[in-house]
Amino acid sequence: MTVDLWQRGCERLATELPEHQFNTWIRPLPPAQVSEDEADAAVVSVRVPNRFKLDWIRAQYAGRIESVLSDIAGKPVRLELTLAPRAEAPALAPLRAGNGYAHASVPAPVATAAVFAANAVAAATSAPMAASPAPASNRHKLNPSLTFDNLVPGRANQMARTAALHVAGAPGQMYNPLFIYGGVGLGKTHLVHAVGNALLKDRPDARVLYLHAEQFISDVVKNYQRKTFDELKAKYHSLDLLLIDDVQFFAGKDRTQEEFFNTFEALLAKRAHIIMTSDTYPKGLVDIDERLTSRFDAGLTVAIEPPELEMRVAILIKKAQGEGAEMPEDVAFFIAKNVRANVRELEGALRKVLAYSRFSQKDINIALSREALKDLLSIQNRQISVENIQKTVADFYKIKVADMYSKKRPASIARPRQIAMYLAKDMTKKSLPEIGELFGGRDHTTVLHAVRKIADERTRNSELNQQLHVLEQTLKG
Ligand SMILES: Nc1ncnc2c1ncn2[C@@H]1O[C@H](COP(=O)(O)OP(=O)(O)OP(=O)(O)O)[C@@H](O)[C@H]1O
Image (cartoon, rainbow, N blue to C red; front, side, top):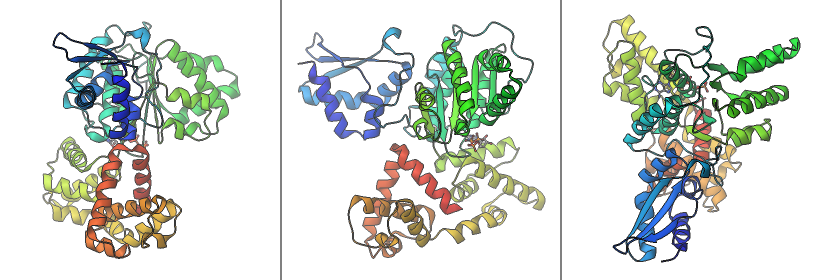
């Protein structure tokens, strides 16, 4: 038994696990200690820098790691995961490694959120918070109706929600800053308000401020004109929790970026918490100084994905309940199947169906929903054809439309073609053989393979998911 057991295990895992998962969860781990127990079994001990990672790795990868190590060692191996002492865990250690990002679509065990919430509440009593009184009422600009209670959990927001719950219970500790990114209308704003509301419920004296990045920009401009930077400082540097939405709006605003940098440093120095949202991950931000984007990425970066079908159904049922209406599951399914882009659109569709039912004094059923949503459905049906998908995907990946039907196989062509097949299956009513026919007479099994491959990869690869999201939005018009 040698210490390079861990090294060899990592090498094997690197080939077996998706690159993104390996880079995010396994690669950043420090070298393990290897020893033997009384029964001669190997014990591999790994120190994990924080509880979040520890729980995640234990739940998702421990079994796999043990079996790989046992295989290499030729005897049973027990994996021991322990929390690294604080000094070993760099305060602002980036979660990201290589090109991997923490990704919201990795399913977590159901117990995890509860465990974190419990830890968070316990830790909250000792969290460093300003003792001075909170700003006058509603200076925090929070919307009290956006809470964790009415945020439907699902795979799409699992990790972001779990991390947010943790911050709400123990601000200023782990995942600071917390950077949440994702497409429009997916619940980023809801989540940050939920953190603020939960913290204030627990500690009404906490100094919390929610604002949109544009408000920060206008504050900087105002104070710049009046030369009152001390006021700006007093307002922001005294906070315990700063929630700032859509930081991509800072692009090209040098003076704002400088002030935000100062605010950022001041808040982190006093262990106040910062949560930011954006439409893209930190390194994807354009025209924002690298010294800022690298700091954005230094805590925890998590994505919120478009909700999957089951989550959309759950959201519709919950929102309908909130409006005092009963939404039959088959109707929720019908709507969820047809409205896929984001939660805001889902809410719009629900509002239409509820209004239609009230005005016509008819029960909510599929026929009524079809009628209520006919404009929306006809727009979708009119716009999304396989030809349109082929053209849009070809444009996006800068290949020729003719390559969609050609027999060419280089990856630069085959992959966009598979993506187009996946979208054709997902966004049109065409059957696999029909799609195969439209892609140069390919067999339906080729289409099925492409559809499965891209669907699977999408759950693990945030970059691909982002691209698909853009394509879907584009096709829906
Ligand atoms: N998981 C969810 N459960 C319940 N409601 C949700 C969920 N996700 C989003 N919503 C609702 O969808 C609507 C849009 O969400 P929100 O405004 O938070 O999106 P966003 O990601 O901040 O979008 P944008 O980037 O456009 O600001 C809100 O009404 C929000 O309450």
